[in-house]
Amino acid sequence: MDYSRVPGCSAKSWRASALPRIEAEAHPAHKGENMSENTRLTAGETAPTFTLKDQDGTDVSLADFAGHKTIVYFYPAASTPGCTTEACDFRDNINSLKSAGYQVLGVSKDELPALKKFRDEQGLNFPLLSDPDLAVHTAYGAYGEKSLYGKTVTGTIRSTFVVEDGTIVLPLYNVKATGHVASLRKRLGIDS
Image 1 (cartoon, rainbow, N blue to C red):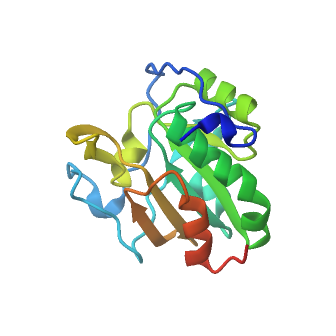
Image 2 (cartoon, one colour):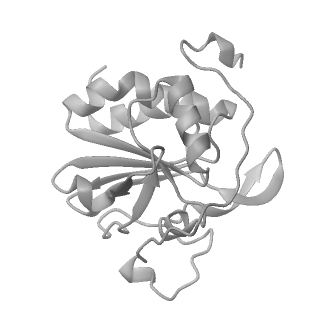
């Protein structure tokens, strides 16, 4: 796909490096367990709580969105083609998502400067959170083995979670970047 044809989107080079450790609270059902790629959250489970830095260095907690329906999505890396497509799709649909009562949070392992650049270049209108030690990815089962171009690799599993009142309502794993938001809107009953 030619990503330069997607309005307002461009794929730029990216660089990821470690930030100081950011603590995430362990999911009570998985505390002390080593979550593998086979461990998945299911609808009805308590959403793992977390506090991470956003692209501007501000602490953002899932608890900040109590009383709101929240979409938490995990993506591999800022400014890469698939992640740019997905982020721009959320950006372009943010008004209808908010009208239906949803807030959006994007989570990746990227450092804050990369997230800020990604937000600014793409005009993203929702928080991008940095999880450099992958603690939140792991708590949500969004990190592990996956197939990439026919090879098994370990990395971020593109995933989306709809959270309401601290509970996982809809867990989606191994989503496709292209068309994901349209599919999500349909599942949530949000008209086009």
